[in-house]
Amino acid sequence: MNDRSGEVLVSIVIATYNAALHLEACLQSVSAQTAAGIEVVLVDGGSTDHTLEIMKASGLPLLQWVSEPDKGIYDALNKGVRMARGKYVYFLGADDRLLPGFSDLLAQAKDDHTVYYGDSEGYSDKGEVPYILMKGSFSQYRLAKLCMNHQSIIYPKTVFEKYTYNLRYKVFADWALNLLLWGDHSFRKQHYPVSIVLYNLSGFSFDTRDPLFEQDRLQLIRKGMGWWMYMRIRLKDFKKKMAK
Image (cartoon, rainbow, N blue to C red; front, top):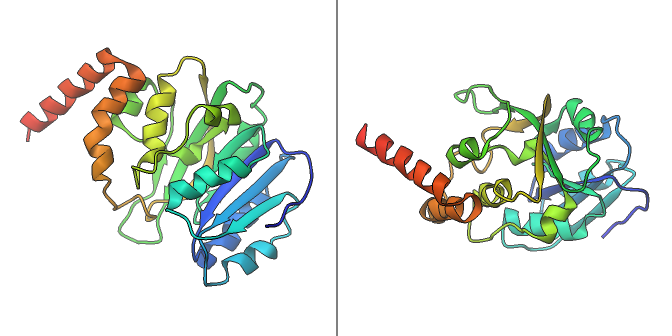
């Protein structure tokens, strides 16, 4: 493990496994940020390609890393949170790219009980997938219907004193966490209309199902947001089913 000392505002956690194809561009987009105090926490699952060599050659001034087998992406992200030294935590895929707006959003982060989020832009290295822009604020109802991109969110680290990614969910553990968090009134949610990330639409979650999350989704909504939202989403799902 490498640990370069310095004052840390935000820890960017990146889970990797044989990510050499994309990682250099990802880390370059981090290096291009104008904000100070950005730490990269790279949690590698034991890559056999040049992932670690690319990371070591990046020249990032604030860097922690570990390479060892894990139980999947969300196990790696939980591990990264435990390693993180920042007041805030941000999750970035090795095939994603930070945009200049990330530094703009980070400049707004002042409160350790406020979740700050912006907009995200999607691309694909598969020609059949269109460009997508996901923007705007997320009410509880919108989040109950639609998974927001966790790449658009800067979390205060205090969130992870209360929540962790549930390894039961292989694809949508981030959605599961946010369903609980958006119903938690001890954390404010603040949206700023700035695009902060270009994320890869053809990544792991794009065409992979998560049947256990699908099975539990309504109960997560009930637990996080209460009975009224649970019944509202059940009614919407019923109408959608009857319309088929």
